[in-house]
Length: 329
Image (cartoon, rainbow, N blue to C red; front, side, top):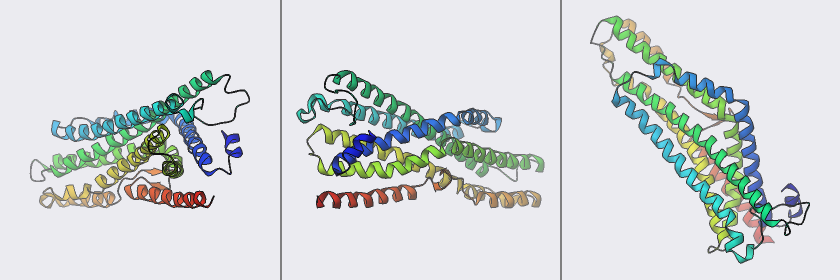
């Protein structure tokens, strides 16, 4: 594929097509390598989630967690369906589009006569694309569900802090309930830090690649005939990439906004009826919760809707440059 890009470097449309595939494959390999490097962290995440502090809550509180996880599963299912559709469209053009007859799903240079070995090469590429799409989806969906679990635990913590009755029971009982909430918060922060350690570097390159791929797919959609298999493939691929980057930003933003309102939930309780010693603990805890829990990509970029806007803005800027270059040819 690299040789193909060098050969077609003066053809903007063909170079764009090759670059979007190349960028996606490089990103997948990067994510897979780091997933393997940090695979022990996944066991650490499992150990954190096995802690007793995450259990023993009411059905109403558990429903908050289940709703968050369910949203992650819906997003994952949607993304996988889009990926399956993209893989299907990748394999259909050679059979349904006369202009793409005997063409391969991924353009490239081969050291043999492709026409003579077309079907084995075609099958090899399609199987490779399907395997790549399935594995990449699995890594993304796993990260989304884990982030949604962290967000659900934050919702449970907020509900717990809001329902503490500082007039009921003796001082020791009330103090123990508050300390349990503080420990719960610390464990959630620990969980989020391990999720970030596990996926952060892969997400960082994913964001960088998304800028490029969204730009090139948008450009190809502009020059391709709307009623064509190639346009359907490009559009489906475009939606997949948008979904992929948007879900990371959405769930990262959800954790950040949920954690930033922990102090508000505590204020909704009757804390003003508490003992002076407990108030001191509340004050220290409130200072801690002023800093929201955030997830970053590579330790640089915060996962938020603001970041999503920045990615789309950057993609459009590069798209405008490509459009001008194409019109000048």
